Amino acid sequence: MKIALDFRGLLSGRVSGVENYIFNIMERLLVLDHENQYMLLENAYKAKDLSSLHFINTQIVQRRIPNKFFNGSLKLFGVPKFEKYFGQFDTLFLPNFNFFALKASTKLVVTVHDMSPVVTPEYYSIKRRIWHWAVNFKKTLARANKIIAVSEYTKADLIRLFNVPAEKIVVIYPGIDRQIFSPNLPDEKLREVRNRYSLPGEYILFLNTIEPRKNLVAFIKAFEQLPGNESLVIGGKAGWKYGPIFKAIENSPKRRLIKYLGYVPENDKPYLIHLARAVGFPSFYEGFGFPALEALSLGVPVLTSQLTSLPETIEDAALMVNPYNIEELASGLKSIMTDDQLRQRLIARGLEQAKKFDWDIAAQKMLNVFNSL
Image (cartoon, rainbow, N blue to C red; front, side, top):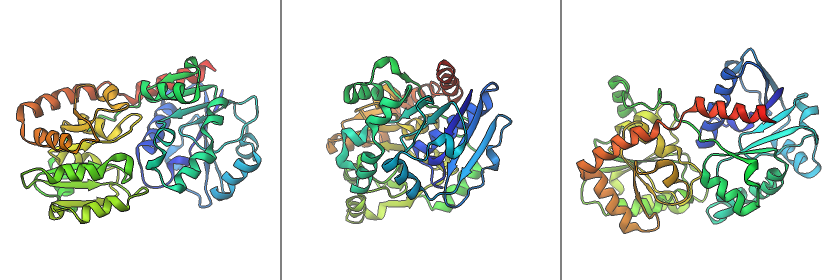
């Protein structure tokens, strides 16, 4: 069988949770599967260097139509068909929602990370909401032969919101790379990262895209209630509707203790997390929760939300609070920073919980889905 992997979402140059998923699942699939043949589909006006992704069972297919024109043609006219544009294949794997056009006989597998655009559209900019409308979730889900949900919570949302038959959905948890996200990081590199970012001595870390769904404004207000002199370090690319978030930083009475780093490259993430005394992840809505699990894998206590998928993926390995309640967020922050008994319990439970999420297992389950078509 020839399987086409949609590679278009990996080439932005700035890796977030979805891009992390795409890279890890693809890389392990290519190593694991010695029977099927794979096509990596990439389309960009400026060609990217994909030489590092050459495997004996892969064919890299690059096309050069600017994506604005490419996606517009797919949306308005349903052309070009991918099989004609990229070459023939049997199954297309979309690791995230995107524009596509296929022959009726071609199989489709799509991963759904969350349904926040449908459940909480108010957290997105007009531009993002137009894109969500244009990509047409309902049509993609109806066309798919199999749907991969990253959690049972996401599966339940798909059934509730779109009446997707339960038997069409397979839950496959993403993994954590425990060689990278390990509590045994070299001291030399830790010192280098601390110096390069001019990190404060003791800090709480918020590391996520700067956008409303991540609940950073409330987290800043909770941080302001702490009695000590610990700092809040914020890392993440500016996403959308971030004006009020940066205003909250600038107007904070603890402004001198808040440091915004901007986008943090993947190679630096483990060190920034490991150096933190605690990690905050108080999102209103999550389909899985990569940042929280990465912190658990590094042995860092986590304060997180008790809503959506997080109780499923984190279980009792983090301190969970109501993200809408600033007083509860502040009380949780104080506890996680000062209660040594709580901290040690969370660290031990976190290390165990993170072991449940493995990319090799995820890739094998994905391969089983492909082989079942």
